[in-house]
Length: 461
Image (cartoon, rainbow, N blue to C red; front, side):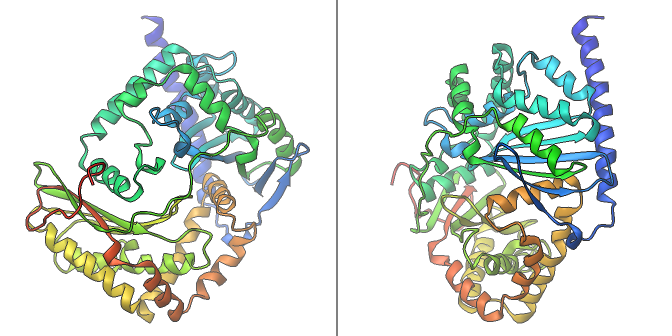
């Protein structure tokens, strides 16, 4: 048997056992009957001044670390779209003395899960390790961030994978719809560019571009860290300095600016020969740090944020059977928050479905929710939060998000009070502020009957 084949079989089996070990411990924590109120975050500041939020829990020998750097894909150089996602994926493909194969072996041999990702406004990472392997896990994390190899064979392998994926997405109706919507809303802003790249932009990325992007973006002045599990503050402080201390103190100046989404509204049809139409729509939303955000979340739940009780679900799916899925959601982009939605329907019925959505959008904006609808939304938000605290990775992710949203370390204690404090008058006022049917930009991909475009394609208007 060839060495490569044997190694792949060995690695696959080893990886399966490692994942199974970590998964079984994660499951054990999921089953712990811990109330959210019992979780008390503490602020840990390392000797070197690196801050992390920690929920210590020694009931299982497992540690979860979540971290993020502000910036993300919005900071990619124009023409090199995809460099963020490609660079983040390559961080676990070799670092320091480890080539790709050796790095993956080191993770598997010690039951460590390490991953990186990129979104529009964040570069994120997650580490899950058994406590007895925490020093090794943090060492591998440090090397991944500070000594990435970017070996040519690994770069080309992942580049080709990314290019195949993006070539497929370029033909995907949902991707076409969302990219078109963002182009109409954001014009020349980085949010309008394909954040994960195109085959052409991915092909233009050089190894030095990857190194430059990581060197400029992974810096301590934009770092946020959260941990949950079996670790004490002193040990965490030491590991923070050893792991994140070698990063540059300051990153490159942010380039992406705040932007106001285009409020022109209107409809654009992207014709495609398919039996169903994909519809996406949206307009400006409410920022996460806005005092009205919780009320806006409740209003969105009433409109289309609930799978089974929202007005759009009842009107479009349950009562008329026009679509299998219809939804809305608040998109809290750093530079321009949005309220967006989507639906898929047969070409012959998409005009009716869209008409119902726009009418309900306007009606809820004018009248606001009922007392019963508001209470149902509150009950859902209060009850569902426990799911975000049901395992160490979910707890550390939640703590990280609270930091990124600047909500305060005591937010989990205050959350219920904040939700319950929203009155019907508040909800109706915010519904009027949030929902503007005339400003809705709608993109339909398909051959919808009874609809005519009122907007020009991006770049032609």
